[in-house]
Image (cartoon, rainbow, N blue to C red; front, side, top):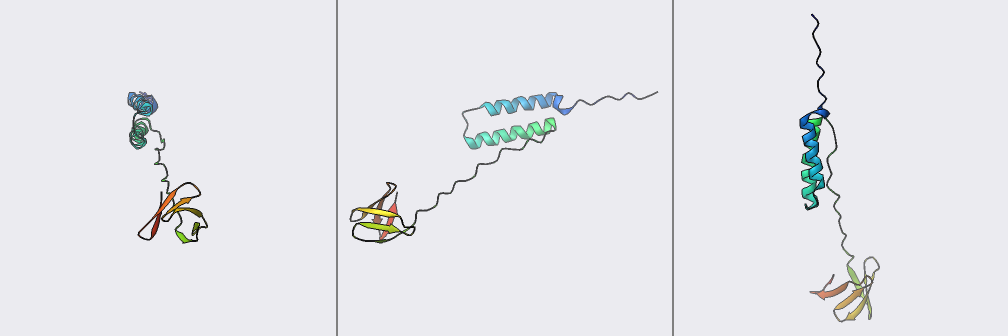
Length: 116
């Protein structure tokens, strides 16, 4: 008597897979979460879909960190202007106040210039 072969249901068609996909769609539609919170929740939902459906969808990656470089140090001054190590020009607007070309105001405190 030949054994009947039962075809296994593909993972993508299982109720568990459909539920995981539905949850991923829901999490992806939330607009009130911070970027970090949404990425964490979405990655958890993607992991569930991958496990339930047998897929290999990559997780969302953390965005690259933007590192803002420090402004060059002011190295010397003459009667009307000061100059930084990169050749930037700062106009003297008072004894201890400078204005940079980009509009930043620099003040002298304790012998050092601080620009903001």
